[in-house]
Amino acid sequence: MHEIDDGNGWKHTDGASQQASIVRSRVFVLKTIITVGNCEYIFMWHFDQAAALHYRIQATGIFSTAPIAPGASVPWGKNVYMPGAWTGQDWVPLAEQGIRVRLDGLGNHGLKQWTAGSRSCL
Image (cartoon, rainbow, N blue to C red):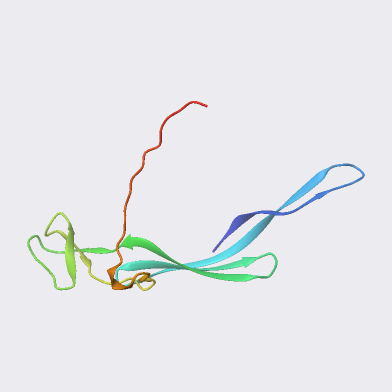
C-alpha cells in the first residue's frame, strides 16, 4: 500500500495577483505480489482522485530457482546456473500471449537488420 505522484492535477493563475497555483495529482495504490509456478506476478489497484479505479497485472520476469544436488537432474526443470547446482522449472507463464501473424500464409519469415548512424557535426 503506497501513494504515487501522478503529475499535475490542475494549475490556476489568479487574474488579479498574477500568481499561479499548481496542485499535484496523487494515486493510492494497493499492491500484492504472488508466485504462480516459477513466475512472480504483481496485482495493483490504482485509486485516483477522480474516483476512478484502474486494475493492472504485471509479470516481473523474476525466475524462481531451487537447489539440487550436484550432478542430479529433475524431470520438471533445467540446470540454469553452475551445472548440477541450481534448477528452474519448465513452465509457461500465466500472462504469456503469443501472436502468430500469417500475412503470407505459413511461409512467413523475419528479417533482422543492424544499422549504424554516422557521427557528424551540425
